[in-house]
Amino acid sequence: MYDDIRDTLDPGVAEHILDHISNNIDQGLSSWEIFHAYRTVGTDDVFMISPGLCMLPSEIYEGEWWNEGGEYHQAIVKLIAEFMWMRAQLQGKDKFVMLMDSEGYTQRDMKIWSDVFYEISMSHLANFGAEKPRSSHFIMIFAGAAHHLNYEYAKKHKEDYELMEGMTIILSNNLEENIATHYQGLDDEKKKEIQKINSKPKIKPWKFLFYNNHPKLNRVYFVGQIIRRNLHDQGLMSLRLDEGQFDSIITYHANPASPGYTTINEEYFPESGKWIFQALLDNRPIVENLKPLGFKNHSDVDVDHKHGNEGNEKLHFASSMQHHVQQCYFAIITETKYFHDRSVIRDGRKIVTTLDTNFLDSITFTEKTFKFLIAKIPFILCGMPNSLKVLRDMGYKTFSPYINEAYDLLEDDESRAIAIADEIERLCNMSDEWWVETQKALIPRMEHNFKMVSSITHRNYRFYL
Image (cartoon, rainbow, N blue to C red; front, side, top):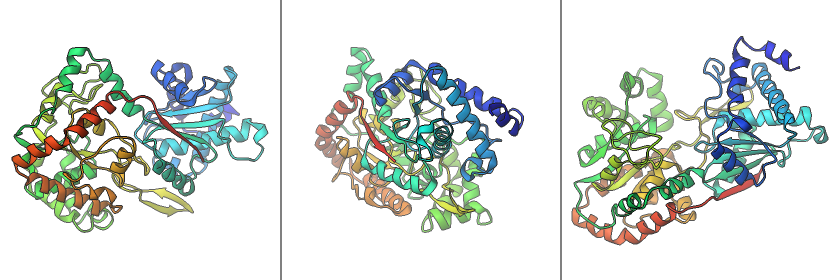
């Protein structure tokens, strides 16, 4: 059966898939992945998969085969299921854990592995009969906020997209815990240096700090709001646009003759999109001059180089960022997930069409948020609605009434975006004297957040679908 399935696929496809999986299962995983999964699940009697975000090459899933179903999709699912079952049996295991070290619910991975697990249960776990997969045999671990709101989102995804039926889902705080682990690994001198950051109120030269690496549309939009309101000279702001991306992203969405213009102005930002992208187009030299402000390095927690990405190394807190956060009164954070899911019905199936993301609705905090808790600087969080509420439920303190956080309650993406832009403008108009007093008032909250994020331990939220 195994060879028969391979023969139904295009040349090279089966080999690519199985080579990738072979490098990302059980004994091929890192010691940290194995430790994290066993600890989260509570047993080592499981067969582990950590497939990563890019399991399949783009030519395989052209047309979103994995989203639309069909014979090709079923053939790949059967191939993976047979391979996984064979490898698990060599170790005498019939319980499977998928560790997705990602930012929230990743649609493609949830779809593929939901179907793979279901295929295994139907083909090899005879005691199930015609039942759905049982939660004791199939577990998915995602890096998402350990909060009941993500359970509500997961239930909706199960119904809408036929995902995770009968499986155990565990939401783990490993992205939060990573920050604490790396901080705790610093020497005492370095710890003291970081503890002193923003510990005393002072007048600062800039109002805001706004890092943007990948130019996702929500990030580009907020940069446009700042430029259109003529606030860009009041803060430190970056936007990494590779060659040709100004035209492929900004010009494309500002051109009334392009499909991108219709999408932005009818579906995402009907009130403001036209003006924001026109402002970006009109100010091309300013936009193209928004270079990265720090350096990306995955092996050192104290680096400072001239080019790269926002100090995004192990602690996500390089020397360049330490300097930036002490020069600005507040930060603007654009988390990975901003837009609510968009979808269409195609051939009787609900298909996700959300621009710019592989992530389904969920609330997830990444290094983008946690590094500013380490930095003891107040922030505006451009994410899904109720993100600040979830952060507070996790034990952190936010910044109302000094920052108007009413935007966090707005479900509509554009209304929330405009409210965020209005608050950025209001904060930019506040005097240095006001900011000094605000810093004084917020010190207890900042110290609380710092102590919490620098010492947090493992926590997770488990549920069944």
